Image (cartoon, rainbow, N blue to C red; front, side, top):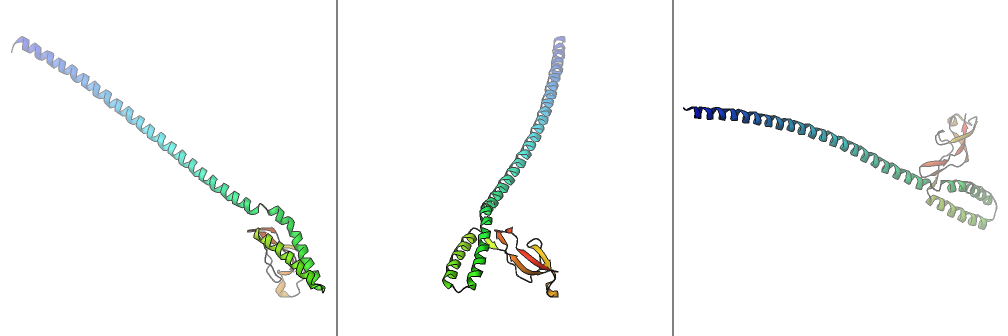
Length: 187
């Protein structure tokens, strides 16, 4: 080999080394860039997961809010007329007293007239959701449902702790008791 060829080989080897270093640097830069991209991708995935979680929680809260407000609205409609119905309860009591007194008299026509008005009034209130709380003498006293106005000695042992007399009827509007029945309890 000649010196020229030898020199060309040295230049080629040096060029190859320089190119190899350049390639190595380029590969390292690409690896670093890929690592940076991977960490950025992981960060974006974490941010996406966080935002998705926030969205799902917000959506669930909104659904709960809608459900709760719908339930409150239904309750409001059920009891919207509660004040008016409660103000009509003394009128019902008056009808009961009037019917009892007219029944004692001999005027059957007046009794029929008052019964018709009373029944119409009761049916109207019943259509609005009013119902009577069922209670009778001898029932067990329940403080959740009944209001004891007094206690008397029980006429017999069977009536101890039970209802002896009903002083005033109780009423419910829907499922809610708006006036508890006033009762006398045996002691």
